[in-house]
Every structure is written in C-alpha cells, then in structure tokens.
Amino acid sequence: MKVGILGLGYWGPNLVRNFMAHPEVEKVYGCDLSDDRRNLIKSRFPAVEVLSDYNELLGKDVEIIAIATPVGTHFKFGKMALEAGKNIWVEKPFTATSQQAIDLNELAEQKGLKIFVDHTFIYTGAVRKMRELIDSGEIGEIKYFDSVRINLGLFQHDVNVIWDLAPHDLSIMNYLMPNEKIVAVAANGVANYYEHESVAHLSVYFENNSFAHFHVNWTSPVKIRKMVVGGDKKMLVFDDMENFEKIKVYDAGVEITTKEKIHQVLAQYRMGDMYSPKVEATEALALGADEFIQAIKENRDPLTSGKDGLEVVKVLEASEKSIKHRGQLIEINQVEMV
Ligand SMILES: NC(=O)c1ccc[n+]([C@@H]2O[C@H](COP(=O)([O-])OP(=O)(O)OC[C@H]3O[C@@H](n4cnc5c(N)ncnc54)[C@H](O)[C@@H]3O)[C@@H](O)[C@H]2O)c1
Image (cartoon, rainbow, N blue to C red; front, top):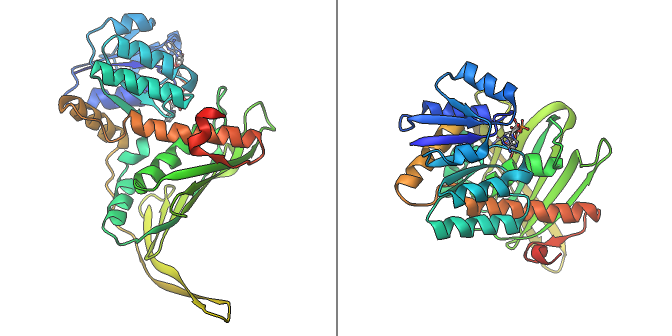
C-alpha cells in the first residue's frame, strides 16, 4: 500500500515512522506547508517523498491519506480525500462538529471507503487488557469511571483542553463500556490564560445510572495520567505514568444493605488482594496502522472507525455548550438542536 501523511507537525512524524515500518507499506508521502517540517522529515526518513501541496498529494496513487492537521481542518481535508477516492485516517478528535462527522461517514459509505479515527489508546496493551478483564466478567458491572489527565501541556490555538485531551479518555470509556448509552453531559472550566479553557471538569451520565468524570488541565505542575474504573466486583486502576505496573486490579468493593423501616444504610467495605497483570508493550500506533490496513483489505470498518469518532465528538460538542453555561446539563440527543 501507499500512504500519504498530511501535516508533519508534532504528531505527523509518528505516523510517518509507523507507516514506514509496516511491512505492507511500500511508499510513504509526507505533505506540509512548512519547509522546516518537510526538511526535518526528509532528513530523518530519506525514503519519504515530501510535498507542499495537498492537491498534489491527492493526485498520487495512495490508498490512505492520514490527516494530522489542526482539528478545524479535519473535515475539509477529509472530504477532499474521500472525494479523491482515498481511505482516510483522521487524528483525534475526528471533526469539529457532529454534523461534520456524520457527513464524512455518509460520504465514505457512498464511496465504499473506510475511515479510521486515531483513538490511539484503544491500541495500547493497557487498555486492551482492561477490556479483556471487563469482558471476562471479573470487574462486574461498571459503576463509575474517574479519570485525571493533567500536566504542563501544549496550549492549542484552536480548541480548549477538553477537545484536546478528553478524546483520549472518552474513547477509552466508550471502548470499555460499549453497551452503555450516554444521556447527558455537564462541563465546568475556565479560560483565564487565553480565549480557550485550559482547565476543565467533564461529567458524563449514562442511562443505566453509571457515571464518568474527567479532569483535564494544561497548567498543572505535575503530570498525572490516571483512571479508576469502579466495578461492583473489582476495581481497576490504570496509571499511564507507571513503566511496568500500569494496571492494578483491586479485589475491593462496597456492599450496601438497607434495613427496611429503620431507614438506615449499612455500607460494608471489602478490601482484598491486588494484582498487576502483564500488558503488551507494542507501540499503539503500529497496531493502529496495521488495523487500518487489514480493515481496508478485508472491506470492514476498523476497530476505531468514523462511528466511534462521532460518538466522542457528540460529547465534546455537548461539553462546549455546557461549559459556556457554567455547567448546565446538556442532554446528548439534544445537541444538534442547541
Ligand atoms: N493521537 C494522539 O495521541 C495525538 C497526539 C497529538 C496530536 N494529535 C492530533 O494530531 C493533529 C495535529 O496536531 P499537532 O499537535 O501535530 O499539530 P501541529 O500544529 O504541530 O501540526 C500540524 C501541521 O499541519 C500543517 N498544515 C496545516 N495546514 C496544512 C495544509 N493546508 N497543507 C499542508 N500542511 C498543513 C502545519 O504546517 C503543521 O506542521 C490534531 O488533530 C491533534 O489533536 C493526536
């Protein structure tokens, strides 16, 4: 296969490296407006052909165009690629609005092309292990999902911290809770460094009464990448800053009994053993690139498709509405109307 990468800024070079390393990729093109970025790629990967004009890239006989440009451009560049008959890899978050995501999904369907949305974490050993543990029934029913992703991060010029960081956590949540329906979202945050919020809290409510919370921040002096998944049998902790024991499974829980008439709630805590399962260390992007290539060959949707991209964008869009109204609860099926 031949692959074209649009956008060789911070993230694009990782796509170049991983597609170059794939045994079924015979040629990689890189495209960026910036001379510096093209020169950098040329010096690191001499076999990559670099271009400055996206239309020229679309004219090449590539099967995949990977779009690693700012969010606001994903729809325009994705549409152009689909219209030129290319399968598209789109960086997270998929699009800037849910309508754009719907339009790209429909266009791909009409053209018989595939969309891969780079929800990178789904291809990490840690997240795949968590899904395996949940699928096996060991964790039980998920009661809550609690996540912190904070550090001194790169301020994005076009989106706030929720749009930048929360797609990772939201995509993990959707992957771990595939059958749970999100009904409403509330977000709080503040834009007191520049025009976009740089610290924010996002709450997600599910139809089955489970709940998720995300804390994202570009201005924290410490780097924390931690999530807790509370099941009614066991609890999972994923700490991405750990080198070895990234996941811990706690045989811990709370059992509530109520005594009728006495109106008294009795909580019994259970704290048993903890263990840390082994997780695969293969680079997520290598697995993502392979998944997309195999999905195209097998004419099926990849594991992280445009549909998954749309589900994440719906929550981001609702969060934006909520944050502007100081945490107002936004029902997900009303997003299109507000
Ligand atoms: N999956 C992940 O973990 C992950 C991590 C970081 C960034 N990202 C995503 O990757 C995307 C890009 O982010 P970034 O931090 O690399 O941005 P960036 O600003 O560093 O790079 C974007 C590049 O696109 C180029 N570009 C813009 N318009 C162009 C055009 N018309 N033609 C050619 N080149 C053009 C710019 O010159 C720039 O080099 C975003 O969607 C971001 O959310 C994903």
